[in-house]
Length: 248
Image (cartoon, rainbow, N blue to C red):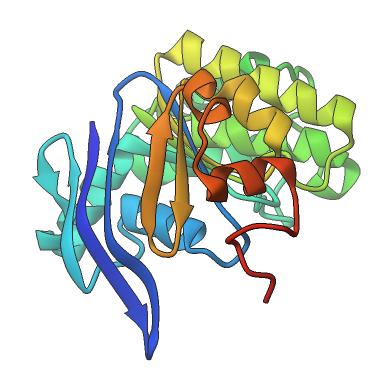
């Protein structure tokens, strides 16, 4: 479904993506790992078309997103949902209005159907009867659940997750992991997850990709990544200061 081919991206003299290649499997969860500031979020923005590469191709269902104009990009983005790191809810809207927002923007359906979908998506993430609550009344875990309900409101094919367990305690992090697994299965989604959470990546990922110095240096199943003898991966998974990854 998603294929990145020879992606290069620099900001001034800083090269962030350096000939990156990655193929993301349809109907699976791919977790992208790597050190902070290593380009993971930049990669995610390329996948959804919020950034264009300096060179290379970003193919979604065979369509090169780098060749599309703004109108065409907006159309193909309907295939995507995204859960931002802090959920990015609109504080001035209640929960129901937040989940309804993409439906009102992009779906030409009646108000009654909108609210049926809102209730269904909230139920899918384990929340009922919270439509009238404001984001400020919600815990961090609940905010992320609402963010996920909004991300799947339009029944996308692809959902992108930016650090979904950041800032959560271990129990709530596990609840979010389980929710990602169940949502991916129930809606048959292709999921791309950015994460530093070592426990989470092995819990939710069908495939794991390691981003290092602008390219994917390893890609495989949890078992293959755990068994890797690549010193970069060994150091990263161990959280060790000893190894080829330099502490800046």
